[in-house]
Length: 336
Image 1 (tube, one colour):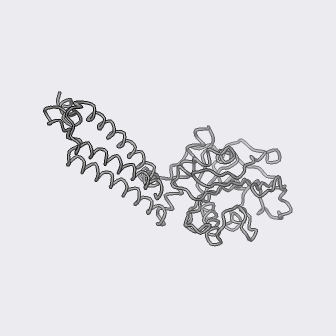
Image 2 (cartoon, rainbow, N blue to C red):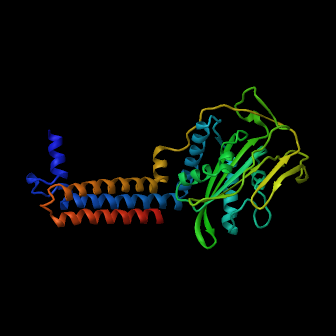
Image 3 (cartoon, helix red, strand yellow):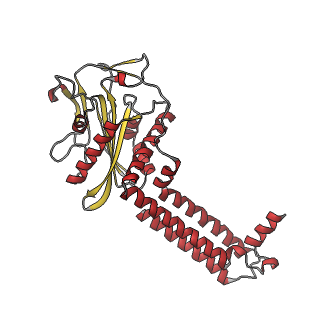
């Protein structure tokens, strides 16, 4: 009965609350306004932390690796293991794109993606690269890749065993942005990984072909490289092009080798609060949508219960809060 009495006093106009529900009185409206401002501040703060701090960029990488592994496990694929060399290769590629202002697998100087694998000393049997730009949070990047059949195939590719991700702030086409570089790999010396007795014959292995894709959430592009340019005696002539276009780069190494299949439970690289921070804008939008719906229902109850006894000042409070929160949703989606 106490709960019913509280709810009735808070939301339903009646003689006991002078036909002015407490939810729309000045004190409650102030609390609602402060909460709305706090949510926007949290979104702005998390955006600044992620995009402007070194620690924030580390959070980006950790969350994206976990999201990738979650999707691989959901499709009964082995999770990927984070590799420091791949992280460094991704960082160097991102810095190169930021320095020279391009967004592509091959640089304007003709530097190919596998150059960065070589640079950090990662001898690979399989290697791949995902790129993204103009994103708002990690889920936007992951969803953009997953919603493209080509990118989805790359993320779930069974040939990849390791991963590295880097995010680099820079400028592209005159606008400040963040470059996301995701590099996949399987080392040539597969014994470095925990292994089973299952073997893959690279002579018959078929690489998955993926293409460039663009979405409204982010600009994402992917290339899969089936190559091994670092093996002694291997030259660029040993890399047999499968398809070469402006949107696709796939090569096959003519050198034979084998890789051991691994089966592991996924290691979690990010903490719950890191996911909260990196998804701040999205979570805040959800909170606003809930509050807007809640206030709307409460306002309709106030309008149509005891319709002859309206208190327009309190009704205007409710309408004003809905307008303010809608404006905050717009600001949050556009700027954070």
